[in-house]
Length: 566
Image (cartoon, rainbow, N blue to C red; front, side):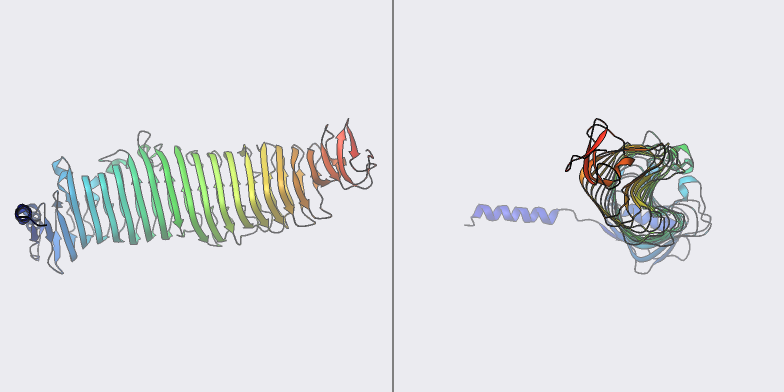
């Protein structure tokens, strides 16, 4: 029931609503045909805090920065603003860049922003759109064109910034984020960049290091650009800065350097040694050039990194798809690689851990290699991995190639604990795992639910290794289980090992040894160490114990079925 009192209340609300101030609206002046700087900045100042839009199709020229104030929305639509040669400054900034304090609630929509050739400048003045000390910034639906100088869009000391739907034709970085920066979103970038398309540098190079600090909670999505450098670069900065909680998703296009660069830039100390943690890289389809990589990780202080949904097909590629580099003795706490589809692999491995690089925990899950060049390993470790887990791998590995390879030229290569499960590998030659230098380290290797077709050896070792196997199938009469070189010593444990009739079982060089506690290991037991309780299935009918399952007791092999001994 509507009473007189409720009618009065409703009327009061209507009066209050009608009396509320509306956002101011203003129109920029028409272009003068000369220098429009003063007129435009006057309009931006008088219209501050409201909506300001440009006349349709306006073409402006300026010789000093246009300055935006808090609360302002600038709509440029199809207008163009050009910074003329010799200006020596930014094209568009916010008041706090020069005036101090902080700005808030600034939005720039549309327009084409051009930095003319020889606009010039010094340090941060070389950037085209430069924003500092802003909370709640939006830059959307515009184009930037430069003929030289530095970053197209430079953000530093910002919170809740969004940069989206940008088209670049620029000679340096596209979007460059310096610390401190929190909750930045960069999305839907197109065009070409002459340097990194998106870069995070908590500290920047000396000439541009006007602000610095942590860069946190950054989301980068939908990048399809041709870059003369990286498509996305994430640096930790110097030792006192960090890049935390970064997501990179949906990167296509082409890079002439590494597609995704994570870690350090050793050009100077400000960009070396900073921390990177909680980084997710996913849905990457971009290509690169020979000698470069899809993901390049060289950070000396890297925490947790996830790489998911990488798709690749380039038979001419000669570098690893994912490389943990030795340039700065990369140190990574945890690297998880999941859902990688490789239609055609060149001579480089899918994953490479370089000499002096260290990964504490490396997990490779759901990886498919449909075709590869002969001899190309899937995972190559020349440095150190403390714990390696490989699961759900399907790989065509022709020639002398391996699923996991510690290369003979990397004398100090070490995988301290490794497991391979739910995996199938096919191809002539090579094998599943190789560690063939006497100086390699591979103390523990577990194989579970593994199948090989056409591989010469399941495992090729010159290390002291405890090999545990379960549900392992070798589907080729030429395929052996274990090859041990002169400095190797393998202890085999497990069950459900299936080999084809006529399989060589094991091969042991002089000085090497194999001890078996796996009854399913079909082998000439004269090649095995006689250890109390050891067991195998003898295949040498010339031995007095006869063929079949045997167990060692008091240094004598005894046939479990017949009791005959050897």
